[in-house]
Image 1 (spheres, rainbow, N blue to C red):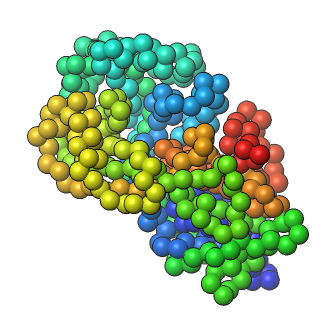
Image 2 (image 1 turned 90 degrees about the horizontal axis):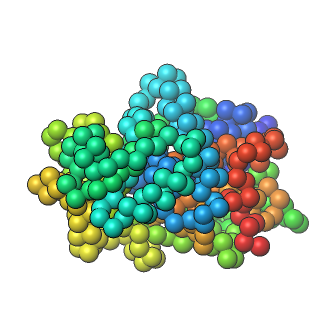
Length: 377
């Protein structure tokens, strides 16, 4: 804490964004207090599949003129993950499971043109290779015989989100960050045209900067005016199984979903995208749709045991892009709205927030306008 007992930065939310930002700011010499209404990582961060695949995600609908900028942001963040994973392992003895496994986006009959467009959108500088069905199965033998084309992306990676969250919280605390669980923020407080802190119950906590990293609950934080940029929850259901030997080496995307295989044979497959408010149920319809996707991609998964199932909420925005940057009153910052790419973009988001808080120059080649919360007016 600062000499006056107040933190330099209050962070609302103890998920991957809050923990990443706290660690980055602490390492820059800023004191942080992280306010989490539950426990760090209890929500979407620890429920994610941990895929670091900006090239694969480029096929998800966004405005065509945004693809290149998002690829640069995602690739930068994926590489930051690799550097961070090595640092965490060396400094704190924790392996978060970062691996460059690669990914493959597959197409069935009638989807070839869409896959070719996806490949073209990556540009020559992004590593990729278009394959016919049989060469794709030579690389991933468990792929369905109905796959007719595939896009191989060797630079993609994955990690273990639960291990990442634990490591980030540990590293941030060791760097001096303070975490308060069970802290429900009742109001963001302002004075004039700048933020001055928050109210937690009857207690007023003051700080020169406030960062809102509350995920799908961001729009519910009192005193934060998001207007058209409001963040809404998108429920995602995931199923877990296992196979011996592992069904795939790469991340596999296709048929409207994915299969993420760990080296020990654990398999995560999903995920639904449902606008159902804050209903957390795992549903029969959701299970059926995920099983249909998984077994279409890899028919042998039909014999795999169902080990677990869960759901959580991803923070969606009006245009599918994150909200990172100024949020109205001076020194009030947003780090939310990452939808499908929260784990992927966490280190890049922490870097951008740190640049804002520290007032340092931000690299000109980063797509700041695309993620600026003020783009909605």
